[in-house]
Length: 284
Ligand code: DHB
Ligand code: FE
Image (cartoon, rainbow, N blue to C red; front, side):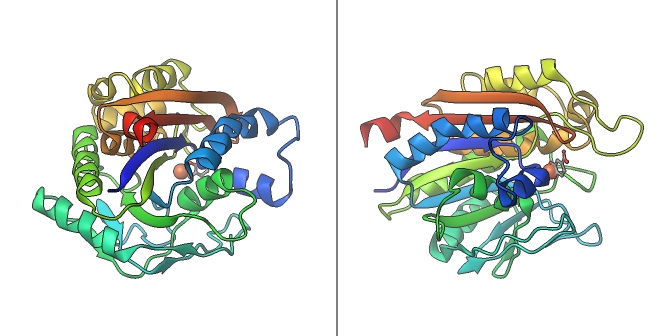
């Protein structure tokens, strides 16, 4: 039987990718952020997951404002990243697991969601940067990817509750999967940040702390703000917390926090990393 082993929640600032490409992990600006991944590396070394189900938002690489799905699920044999204009393209392919993707699609449609189903899909920095952070020395990524894109870009955005419910449906699909893979769920983006307009540079330490403090023990607390209230609180890109909300729901009730790191700012973003382990992982 498959196991949902845990969750990795992390910011996906493209500048992190440039810092990795230039080997700046020990640089005083970057070190406090990269150090937050040490517990994640130890955990990944111990658990060795086979599959990563990643909730993220596409920022204009595979989808653009002309045609933006609220939810899209990859069902491709392989995914690739391309340069989105940040000056970096990560060359390593991301192997897919289409059978599991289809099982997830079946379950979420059964649960009355209407996702776009992508048998061809580019993944942007919101997948590539977290993968480079999680498996920095891998010649080839040791996990198969199921990418699940949530629209956090083109309003109207889905509600936090809708994203929670999507995550619950994905969790049901993972628990019903008859393979023997170990699965890590990832939620990428956030925490508070706003890149444009009069409030560019906006951060909200109190709201970020509220999210991190409740993510594991009381994730429904994050549903008390509407999507537009989250934009007010966390900034127009801080609403990427929707990816964290979905990923957390997929993990199920029984989990505990292993580590957290919060460092401001990285670029324009309050950068955060959290590692959560399920009870299933401990007893597996
Ligand atoms: C930044 C953060 C993001 O989440 C993103 O997608 C792009 C840029 C930033 O802080 O630079
Ligand atoms: Fe982003």
